[in-house]
Length: 329
Figure 1 (cartoon, rainbow, N blue to C red):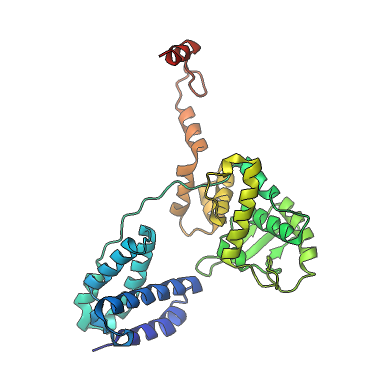
Figure 2: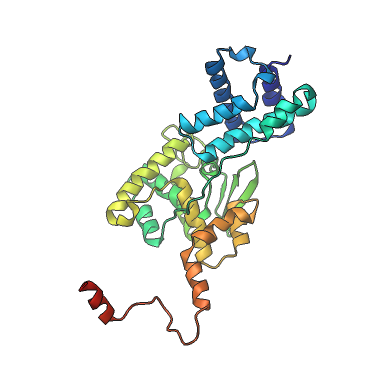
């Protein structure tokens, strides 16, 4: 009889850190999954957490837990699938050491993921971007910090986790300006910045060095802004920007929306999709293909290339007489 606690301790203290060197975010996600699963098993079976045996976690209990996430916690299919991956990862790891539970583990590993739909991405157009960058009050330090932060993200497409990790030494403002960061999966990458952003950053750093801490975008005490704090600051500026740019009002804008904006700006500039994938730190270009699907400009250009020579270019507009007739119906 093997208790689940023993397997979990070995998994989290040795395997994910030493052998796999997983990122802190991934480890935290796996930890939260198992914490939720154990609490669910304790609630539904009246068993204490320390007394749960490895064989107690079978396909039926895992399926019930996934249903609980969907129906009671109202998690999305993507979140449910992420939890399922975390469960599978542990059982795949322990399978060779526990052949006596092979059939139970095999049945868990065959649980299918939920089907997901990928909505079209949201991004800001040029007018919306300009309105957002003009929203912070640059008469204050907080406003100047926020404007620099937003401008940098729109220029580079950094993830919010990458943004938080930046220090004052991460930015290089020489002849070929760029910014260094630790990307997803602990991958080190460098991303160029425009000369306009470089000049703005030089001015910002002059003031930043007079303040405590080493974070590039600090809070009141010099520590890096948290994820929630950054999203709150963005929400404030979006509300302000929406006053001069009404098209922002129906949009749900997050920091990841700004990352999408970077990608779409590059795509509209004619940059190859493989270069955009490299710019954003995507391992596979298939991840970046979503921007092709969302780009109506590219689709219209492709449609225009199929236009017969005798057809007048541009969007079709019916004759005025037809409109008059329709309005009279």
